[in-house]
Length: 389
Ligand code: SIN
Ligand code: CO
Image (cartoon, rainbow, N blue to C red):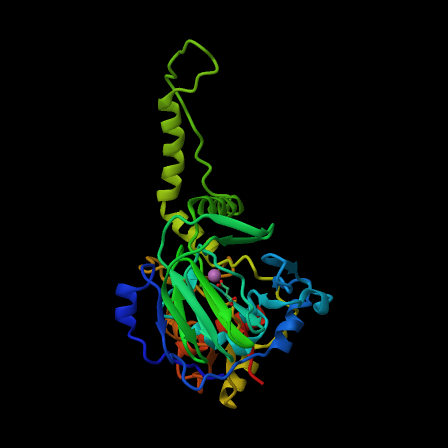
């Protein structure tokens, strides 16, 4: 698995002028792009019950006296491709990075953004004229053009009228394009949230969309509350010595509402809630339970390194840690699980977390290497890393 890098891309300029602000096209960001998967792999994923997939198709009126177009949406698992793939159609599959390890380097291209913001890799295959129609997304997305060509139009932010040409298809009624370009293999388009866009395949093509998540208050609070419940912490109770009398028992005083809010604010502001927040951010919802994995001993792992083997990271192993931890231990989270390990292992762990393929531990030189091997064995046995073939 080779780590690839974006070309023709000025990161500082992008972060200053585009990220969350303006869409842009990066021509030949990935020259000589080779698709890590094809439409047959994608169809295989779409037929699986636990994988989120859909086919969106549009049938245009065939005769002149017929009007308009008919949209259809079929949700996976797709059993009968023939009946769903009518007219101009596109097959979209979510979280492909969790199922096809060869696609992980496409997600890692964007490691200049933090793991906690990265959502998943959605891959689509479209026949000529296929697309999901003009729409808005709530998330930032980088769309890599794989094989084939696709015309992308992107408009400006604004108030657009939702239309539903099918009950499960939210589109918008039209926008003035600011970007109107044909993407070729290896080109990338970046679209910030709320910018209307429409991608229409000019020929059969594959697209790789790396989506980012930005929780809203509702999601943040409900995820934090799950972590709080699990943690058995925060048992400070409301109290009201000198409670004021009132004219009606139904009345809740404003000062009481303020005190209750204060109790919750104190919880959110406490140092313990930092850890709970990290714990909940490290959990990606799309993840299924890990398959049964091999059980290695620490010695076997050390030997594997000595023999030159390398280890690959699962896409869901996006470790998170907080800066300025005060303890002697290094604390990090993967999929909601807390790991609290001796500080001497931190440096090697950070190297491990940042790459897709790891083979740096050739010899055990010191206590830090030994400690690292011990923790890495635990992470491998938990299914987060695995031995490359
Ligand atoms: C795609 O069809 O690959 C992307 C759909 C979108 O614009 O979100
Ligand atoms: Co979109």
